[in-house]
Length: 168
Image: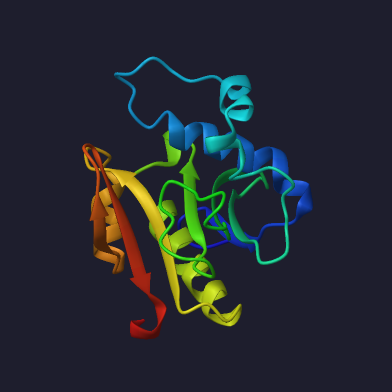
């Protein structure tokens, strides 16, 4: 355990349920909005495909666990095709990042640690870039920018961002 009372480990197939929990947490980042339930996240292919069949070839994930062994956050990468893109899709072969941290652990460095570790794992996995989509009002956007993600596209409320791993 680090001094932060949590440790990081690679995600396994046994983490599929927790990754789904973190996807739901990520979807519901804005407490001012009506929460989207787990069932609705899993029924909508646009969100469900971030976790369906975890892990597929090319998937990578990192889980943060607190001192008692309970998962508190996760970051994972998934490849999508141009026929079935994610929200932050930029190109085939560039995995898209998803991150979720339980609310009591937000703002405590967990997200930053997960980002650093998933970037390291992506380099080891042979990837040279990772991408994501984030709503501009989401605090996590600042974290992504500070970690080295740059905006490559914008919609009405969100940005597509890319991190060049060769520059790390």
